[in-house]
Length: 497
Image (cartoon, rainbow, N blue to C red; front, side, top):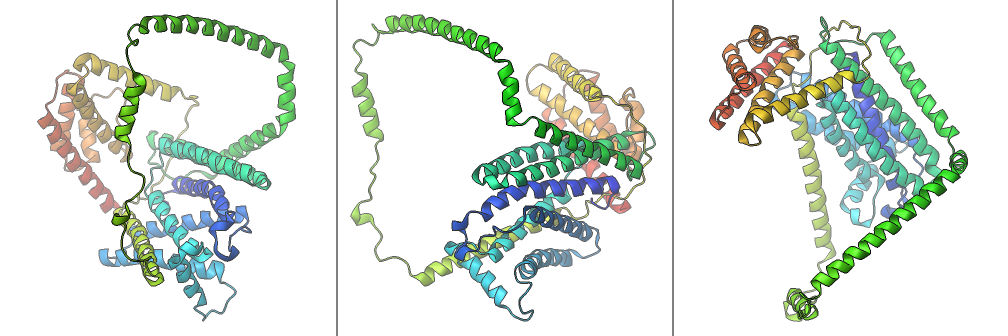
C-alpha cells in the first residue's frame, strides 16, 4: 500500500506519526513509574521528541518491510520464515543497538541480561525485556496499518480516536508530572498537524479517484505545498489563540458578564425551588397512597431472610486446605519461564497471522490526472446523507419493519458494494444511470462475470424499482454470487499487479 502513489504514501507516513505521538505519553508515564523497574533502571531520561521519532521510524520501516514481503516472489514457506525472522531479529537488534551500543561487539552479556529480564519479570522490568515486547507490539500495529483503508472516513475515524487517546494520556501525564506540560503541548501540536494533513490527503484522494478521467495517482508538488501551508497556518493560528486566551484573560472576560451570571443563577435557584415544591407534593401524595398497603408488611424481616440466604462463607475450612508447603523457587522459575515463552509465542503467532493474511493486497501504482473541484463545505455529504435517509424511509414504507426490510437492505448493499468496487477499477456509475444501462460497463470492471452481475442487477431492480421481496434462500444465493464476483475481481487485480 505504501508504494501505491505519493498521496497514499504521505497518508501512511502521517498516520504512522500520529500513532507514534499517541503512544508517547503512555510510554513516558510508564518510564516514570520507578517501582516497576528493577535496580532503578527506569527510562526517565529518554527525550520525548526522540522517542516519537524512534517509534515513528520503526513503524514506517516495519510497514515497508511488510509491503516488500507481500510483493516478493518468495514461496509460502520462505515467506513465513522471513516474517518470523524479522520479528525476532528486530527485537534483538533493537536491544543490542539501542541499549548496548557502547559495549564489546563480541560480548553476549547483553543477551544474558535480556533473557534474565524476560524470565524474572516479577523482580521488576528491565529495559531489554521491555524493548523486546514493545517491538512485538509495533509489529502488530504495523501489520494492521499495512492493510488499513485510506478513505476519508477511515482516516477521520483514526484522527478522532487518536485525539481521545492523546487527551487521556497527555492529560494524565501533565497532571501527574507538571514539568511535562510543555511536552504534552508539543505532542498535541504534532498530532494535529499530521492529522489535518492525513485527513486532507484522504479527502483529496477520494475526490481525485471519483473525478472524470482520473485513475488516482500522484499528488502534484504545488498542491502538496499549498496543503502543507494551509495546515501550518491552521496550527499556528490555533497556538496563537491558545496563548492569547490564557486563564487570566478568560477570567477577566467572564467577570465582565457577572451581572448576567447573577441573573441566570437567581433564575436557576427559583427553578430549583419550584421543582422542590412540586416534588414535595408528589412524594406526599405517593406516601398517602402507599401507607395503607404497607401497614402490615414487615419489610425488615423479609429483607433480612433474603440476605441471609445469599450469604456465603468467607473462610475455607482447615480440612480443605492443600497439603504440603509452598512451591520451590525452581518450580516458580520454571513456571515463569513457561508463561513468558507462551506469551512471546502468542505475540509472534498473532503478528505472523496478521502479516500472512495481508500478502498480495498491495495496490498497483497508477497515474493520476488532477481534477479541479469546487468547494462544497460539506454540502455533498449532506446531500448523500439525505438521499440515504430518503431511500431508507422508502424501504420502510414498502416492506415495513421486519425480515423483508432487512433482506431488501442486504440486496441494495450487495449492489452498492459492486458499484464501489467497479468505481475503484475505473468504471463509476453516474447518478442518473439506470442499473440495466450500467450493466455492460459493470461487466468491463469484472471480466468473465456477466452471469453473476446480471443476477445481482436483476435482483436489485426488483427490490428497488419493483418493490418485490426476496426470500431467505434467494438472498443466500445472491451472497454466494457476490462472493464469486468479488473473489474474481481480487484475482484479476493481483494478476495485474
